[in-house]
Structure formats: structure tokens, C-alpha cells
Length: 190
View 1 (tube, helix red, strand yellow):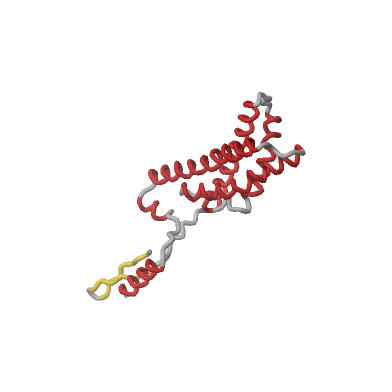
View 2 (cartoon, helix red, strand yellow):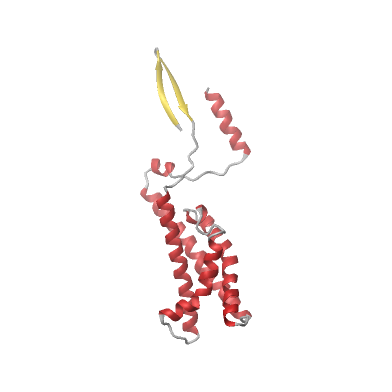
């Protein structure tokens, strides 16, 4: 809200314009955050593939790990882009929203990766493989994104002045009573 002090022949009055802070960041910050998320997602899935190969006494050559991770990378990114995996909620500083965005993408992307792997190999995997894959990738993907959002939110709030915190605030989701309260406070002012 922007208020300007106006003096009229010895009396004080306030004139102003009410505006809603939409909390929009510049495009470069959002793009940088999406690139960071994509890199972290790829690293998590490569880690999953490397640990899986290691536990089955298979080689850890980078090409072999990438080949193992490829179906999961394909499934993840094919799901994450249209489901908002790199959208505003996923790129924000709220751990719950980031985790929810990641969970939606995980619920579609990892089963898609399992399906791609099954088609490439010509057979369906064991139930144990499916369960382990879902649990481990869920922990890695959802966990790292929620952790990143929590850490950056804490660091961002510690480094900002109160004015900067107010300027970067996200939209508040309110209810009709809060909107009514806003309208009545504005009409009382005039």
C-alpha cells in the first residue's frame, strides 16, 4: 500500500492507493530455480540408479548408471513439466507446496519410468522392485525438494530486512470474510 501525506490548510489528510503485492519474482530467478530443481532431480535419480546397480554388484561406469537411470529420467521429466514440477509452487520457498508439487510429479513420473523400463527390457519387474523404486525415489525426489525450499526460505528470511520480506511476500490465500474486512477497512478510511 502506498500512502502520501497531504496537508490542507493546517489539517492533515492521507491519500493513497491500495495495491496487492503479488510477490512476483523476476523471470531470471524463476528460471534459475527451475534449472536448479531439474539438476537436483537428475542427480537424485542418478543416485538411485547408482545405488541400485551397486547393491546388485553391477558396474558403476557413468554410461551404465545413466543407462539405468534413463527410463526414470524420461518418466520424471515427462510428468514434471506438464504437472507443475517446475512451476511457481515447486520453485517457491514453502516446503509443503514444493513437496506437494514433487509428490504429484512422482506419482505419475516414477510409474511411467517403471513402465518405460519394462517396455525396454521386455518384461514386468518384480513387486519388490516396484515397491523399493517407489519408496526410494519418493524419499529422494520429494525430500530433496522440500528440504531445498525449507533451507532457502529460512536463509532468505534471515538475510532480508522487514521491508524486503514484505516486498517478496507471496499471495495470501484468504477467505470471503477477510476480503469483506479489507473492503470495510478501506471504506471506513474514506
